[in-house]
Image 1 (cartoon, rainbow, N blue to C red):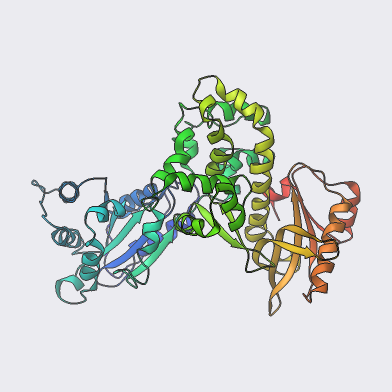
Image 2: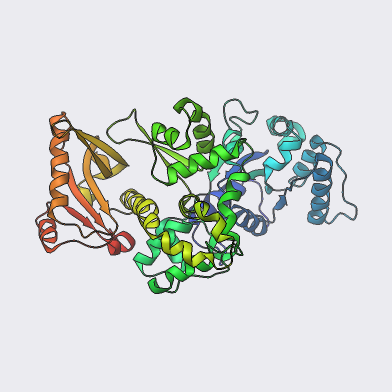
Length: 498
């Protein structure tokens, strides 16, 4: 497709691209944007999310240029780029740029007549051996007169090293303030993931998602399209895929850590992830689990956050308390189930034995917390405003102290939102149980928590209790829901509607 300067095209999404409508719309809008001169965009995201697939499809749809960098010396990288430029332009002899300033001139020249997307994938590989490249790119983009103004490259830098990519547009970076696009490609949402895996049973969808999450590549390349046929097949599927050393998915969690350049003492980082995966989610709890002082783990926690491997979530009721969670389900599964049994799993017949004795760990440490996370995601992305009498804005977990009982109540789903013109109103407190049928005692506990919050001076007049269950509800709790006393969310509602 030839695009003239000043035009803006809404390109149809490729037929073989699953979901990603928003990402495709943003990329095509950037690639076909009007205006003279160069433009810069950044695309990032954890590995295996389909960034390269998106950008290759964009280059193909727009007649753009795509270059995938590899781990190589600066000289070899320039040679490889010249060869790719020759293939794109049809030049009989590949150009031989001797430094990156020359290479950038080549890339800019390809967009002399029209806006051309110029994709540089795995950009961190290039910067590793050419640290001045961001500054050189800034200088080239920053020229607003002469021949640069008459060239229209839409430069797209892509990378999976989240710590590097996160700093590429920061205030200390040469490229700060230069980008017109900063797109993060996230994992598929849990409903999209179920459709992508072709799983209709919501219980099976939760169990599968608790292991492989919404990373697209894990179905295609990493388990070779081996999908659990039904609940009866799930245990066998686990043994033949994620617990099978012959499958790429088996070692993927370790690779995700090894691929991050900012991680030095990898044994400490593995221990931190293992601590969080097995239920230690506070600074003190993590430090105690790894046998270090809390001050010793502040740097690993910060680095793992920058890498996108950990999330740090504020407590809904205690803003000075941070709760850490592993961002990638496969990493949680690896550290809770695979890593402790590495020796036995190295034997060809060890998978079934490991899985049989890991059931309790899987359900309590992996599925239970993961179900809570999916319930929060349901509120954030799928619940209609009328569900809680207002628009959900902030969804988190929280803790409420009970001075009289000298205890603390964990609240799995806390919803703050907007009612009319008022924002930050408490809309709901909720409890999530994966394997328990929930009844009136669960509702009474939530009502007690609301009384505790009210006694602290919090406005609870708009708040309604909510019960989320993977096993269902008693008739008495259903009757309470009919009276409007509680919101009930089961697996069908979690996956099927609001």
